[in-house]
Image (cartoon, rainbow, N blue to C red; front, side, top):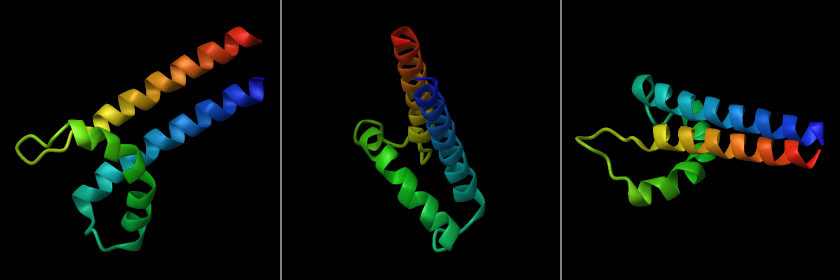
Length: 86
């Protein structure tokens, strides 16, 4: 069971890292670069549900920040639930 908790934690932290990397690369790299395209393909399924409800304000997209908070909350809930099952 500890392996499953560790997997959830690593998966959540990797997802948060990719979300942050997506934001940073969008500031400094053009959208036609292969690295940015690959990360965008990974991150877009996570961000698209949030983009339906949260529109950009003055050209600033806050959905990555909301997604990071959501991923962290899901990680906390899953690890606590799995820890109680042990």
